[in-house]
Length: 98
Image: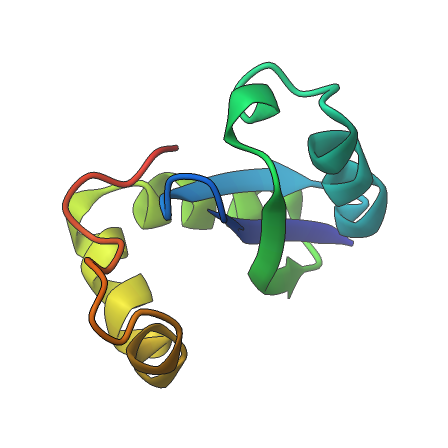
């Protein structure tokens, strides 16, 4: 299986969107600081993932989620999570990391 996942940085409240064959071990690498893109944005929380049977489908989904339309989808899909998590705080959205 192939996974597209979204991490939330508890440090800067920005999102990171990634792709992996093993979402749990990849998340552990992010948390340990082994991934350059997220090393300085720890601690991180895995807030969403999708599973795909075909690698190309997962890669295409990752590309979409990193786009403007994809960011809007994420905000809509996780609407209640963001409402609860960010009451009175600026929500992730316009300045999300990838």
